[in-house]
Each structure stands twice: as structure tokens, then as C-alpha cells.
Amino acid sequence: MTYRELQKFAEERLKNNGVEDSSFDALCLVEHFTGKNKTRLKLEDNSEVDSEHETAVLHGVDRRIAGEPLQYILGEWEFYGFPFKVGTGVLIPRPETEMLVDFGVKLAKDIKSPVIFDLCAGSGCIGISAAKLLPDARVYCVEKSPAAFEYLNKNIGLNRVDNVTAVMGDIFDGLKSFGLPEPDIILSNPPYIESDMLNTLQPEVRLEPMEALDGGEDGYIFYECIASRWLPFVKGALAVECGEGQAEKIALMFETDEILKDFNNIKRVVIRRKSGCSETCGAEG
Image (cartoon, rainbow, N blue to C red; front, top):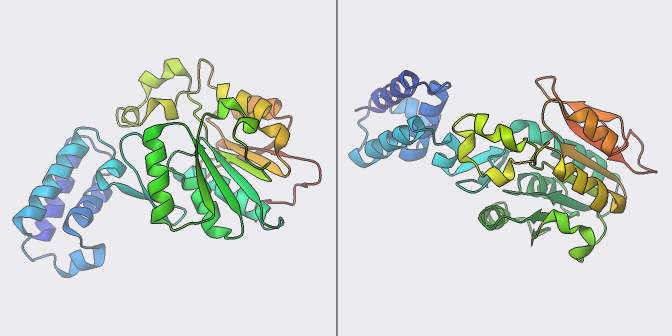
């Protein structure tokens, strides 16, 4: 097959098997397994694909049809313009989570050598992105899952950030158990899905680690932990991502009324500022 034929064949197979964004997924798979970007593919669209690359693309298509997330197949995904290794055992970075980085970076610019924590860090996408944009910051990424912790360390190396420290541990142990400095800023995208709702998620989402999604019986156990065991030590501000319909209860928990909506107009981020940190600090641009 030519590159054009291979991409068309991949797209049709994906579409016929119920994959929603079949055109995008097909292009990503062809780019990844042939090593050619979109521009090069257009230039060579009538050239024959060698059998090894063709087989790899078709195998990738089969994996996608079987429900494996595209990001896991590619092994890497972009977040805030930076590359992050992903795979089985780590949550896939999502666009709405970039709001936490936006807030943290804007707030930190008013703080000399800020100390930033990324709690429930997973791949490290929040903390590493903040560290890339704030080279004078000290960033601590706390994660308890061994599988996710491995990806966290890979991503620290991939993004060449020497101001990030990966910390293996459970946030339920509280700040004082880690022997770390008190944070100026805490950013977190903790698990927040109710336990009995996990089996209703889309099949490909259920292939992501359940411990990165399971927020306990009511979906709030991690927020309760952060409010009681981490918030008291924050010197500047804290921002957490949450699920649809959760923001108001979390805001009460953190004694704040500052909530940010995402690009789908969903109340997505709850912010609690400490005294001395006005609403102009880290405010939307």
C-alpha cells in the first residue's frame, strides 16, 4: 500500500469499528509507526510503505479497535506543549488539567524561588510543566503508585528538569511525614470519581489505573485529606481539579468561593488563597 492508501484504510477500519475520531487517530498511528510527520506523509503519499511499517500501523489499528487508548499505543502524549511518556499504570494527561499549570505559574511569578507541590502527580505533567516554565522554582511531585512513579521519573528525564524532585509516598500520611519544606503553592488533580461509578466509565478509560480515578465512596476523600493534612501548611494558594458537580462542595471544604470554569463551561478548578495572596495573584490573564 501507499502512504495515502494506508492512512485511508486505517481510518475506514477505525470508523467502521466505532472509533469516534477515526481520522485523527489514523493519522497519529501512521505518523508514529512510520516515523513520518504530516508534511512528509503528504509529500510521499503515493510512495509505497515498507512491509514492516505497514504491519506496525495495522497492529496499532487493531489495538485501538480493541479499546486501548491512543495515548498508550503511541507511548507519549503532549501536555502544555511538553512531551510526556504514558502507558499502562499511569493516568493520561488531559487538556483541562492545564488550568492548574496556568494558575500556578501566574501565582508563582510573584514569589521568589517558590516551592510548589504536585500531589497525586501521576505522570508529573502538572509539576514538570510548572518547573519548565519556572526554572527558579523547587517542585515536589508526590505519587504513591510504583507504576506511575516510574513514568514520573521518566518524564523528569525526558523534559530535563533538574528542579523537580519525585517523592514516593501517600498523601494521606500528610505533609509532616515527608520532611519537605512548606509549600508556597499546591496543585493537584486527585482521583475524584465515586467508587461505584467506575464501572460505568467508557471502556478505554477503564484501562487507565483505577487508583488514579477512584475518589472513594462519595468522590471526596482526597479533597478531605488535602484540606486537613496539606492546606494548613500552604503559604500562598492551593488549586485542585474536580469533577462535574463537585466544585461547590469542595469550595465549602476549603472555605473559599473561588471556582474556575473550563473550556466546556464546567466548574473545574477550586482555588483557596491564604491571607496575603489576593485574587489578583495568579488571576486569569
